[in-house]
Length: 248
Image 1 (cartoon, one colour):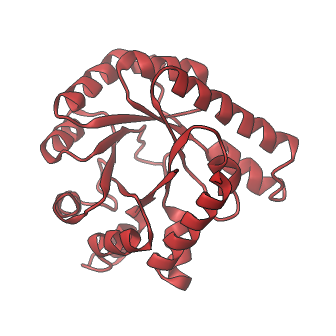
Image 2 (cartoon, one colour; image 1 turned 135 degrees about the vertical axis):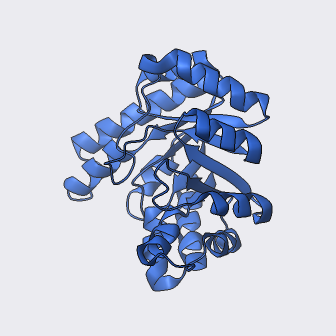
């Protein structure tokens, strides 16, 4: 059964737009759980643009499903993760000027540094994931540094799908899906867990959810956007139903 991790960063984005105390990300996590989420994801960015340190501490104490902490592989962030001990820590690239994460982590170029971060996290009993492009070289590097999970970057697929008339059978879209399938198979062959995410929504999620061996999908913006109209609990429920339908 594919699990759904719901990213609630943009609940905090809305709160920070007014520098106030609502909406509360912890409340959002509860609503997501009641809608069927299997985990909660937050990205504690170095510039603290949305999720704050206090949010992560409260989520760690109060959430009753898996907590996935996205973070840059810096000494500060690794230290925070080791102290809080989320069920999973996902290492991602991070740029101060980007609106959202713009590409996968280049493990090949930073192998020694990332191997040390993974070792520290593993020593604290935390499952470590890496967010990478669907590139066999990056999959091999992820295995070498000791990552237990690879989350494949679905952004190129999602952007091709949107640009080409939402046609899942167009050549560019099928090429991106093939890259994801092949990389996912390589992840599993190397004994790691195959997860995926980024820019997935209610229209493009099913071709990814149907991939063999996929363990988790992490989706945030589309679910929070949908929740404006139907509520977060229902938005999660609808996404979970689409994922289950495709996986079946």
